[in-house]
Image (cartoon, rainbow, N blue to C red):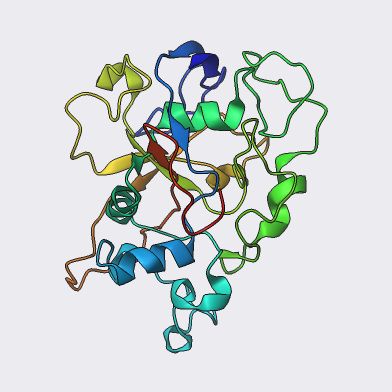
Amino acid sequence: MGDFVLGDPSPPRDILFLTAVPAFQATQTTDRWINTYESTNGCFAACVREGACHSLDVFPTYVVPNDPTSGDIWAQDEYANRAANLTFPGAERFCEWLGGRVVNEAEWMRMARGDDGRVLPWATGPFDPFDPDALPGEPGLMEVVGASWRPEFDLQVEDVGENPTDVGPFGHHGVAGLSAEWTRDAALPYEVSDYTDPFAAVPPNCEDCIWRVVVGNWFTTDPTPDIRSRGYGVTTDFSDGSPIDISGHVGYSTRCVFDQPPPPYCRPE
């Protein structure tokens, strides 16, 4: 619980969406618990084995890039602690299996930015979070997480929890690096959605919205990257096995939120 800064003082726009929240003070009135680590392949594989998740809930990433015959990375033991590239319905099923739900944007942002409106999760220096040019005198985003990916293959080369610097103010790992992460929030312009409660699960009347807010590593190519902005992903469900072209769709990892401290599972919490 408590007050914190949500949003970006100079939110970018594109022709379809307001892709960041204008900065404002938000108040969290109910305690929540969020997984220390984002979803991993090994934890997702356990969900599949128990019948709560489907193998088509994860986007294919191959052991040998672009070679389906080499096998899916998510199913290989040596990649069990890499972040899982889930579809949004897959993320929902995964969190339900753990006894929680997909985190929403405000919960994720407070987890990442703390109570002092950090621009980078590991920041410790004082700065004004409402200043669009405010960046503390700390290591930059690409300096800390740039080695986590091979951009030419869009492939992780680091396990979840390995980076000792990419840790948020409440001890959450991989906040800025590794995979971008789903939230439950619908990606709508805030003035259209009338989204007045930053801790609502989704904006009003939008349970079936096909675009959801994505946070995290997706913006590391921005000229001045930080953690205030957001992207959006398509929520297509491939689990019925229909022959759908998945080109143009992207999977993301997720964190789950709980009403009480969750028991450790898949990774030590």
